[in-house]
Image (cartoon, rainbow, N blue to C red; front, side):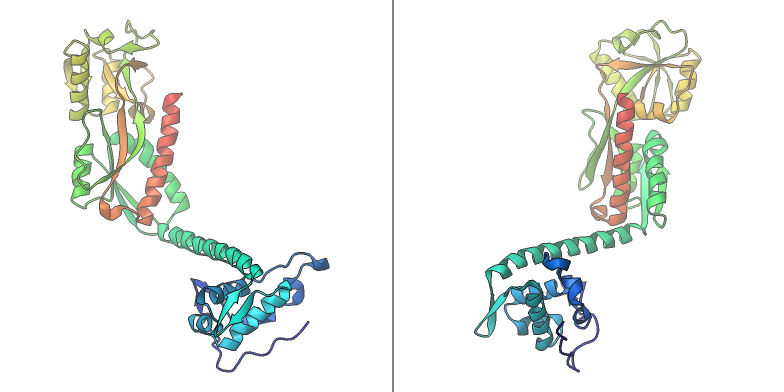
Length: 347
């Protein structure tokens, strides 16, 4: 094979940047012909470094302009173009005045070079994003049943994928979580709301995670325990256990729509306590799927509640958290955990 002329003494020996890709002007000269041309005269195996040099020449409009961008000498750039043309057996550029013009093969090759450059840039960005996700702190505020299901599942996978990521959980009800978010004391809040009770978002961004259906929960030996499903009206004469303020309001509102006022005897937002009271035959209750997924008392009977609206579970972000790689990593895992929870609820 023809030996390439040595690089000029003043040619830089560092790794200049070409659209984010480091190129060594000397490195590409030591490529054997057999690494460039396929055996038996097949399709050319292009050296990607020379291809990116060609791309810079094509977009710069001249060898001199490309050399300035690369921080090389003009002869070094010319050598790369000549070697690329020799490898291909095709003329890629023609000189026009002090600049260059692309031949038809050159136009075709430029399209491929642009695509390769874009893929290299995307790969670099993806790897940088991955590196950023591996570190940082994300503070989550979430309501109890989400903490026990969605958040715990997300944290398990985050610990495996990004062991350097510092994720911290504070368990609070949705109103308190939104206050923490507004005050900058957390980066992401997992909340729920019922139809007609949308929280005041302001500048906050809400990402819907899942619909969480509610179920009727009755004790052992209850007259309705053998039913496949019930309506709220079927339970109109029962003693009731109410949950958090939002859940209590929702129960009362839906009961009034059904034509009765529920006889609420007990109030607790602890779903374990709710099921213990129901198991003792003291009262009935409604519980969301996430609460039952988190902890199910084997003594109670869970019945689908026909016509009763589901609640919506969302992840809420402050504007400053949007697009932060560590927060996006947590959000991605919450979405996956929610999809698993939704599928479980459907079964």
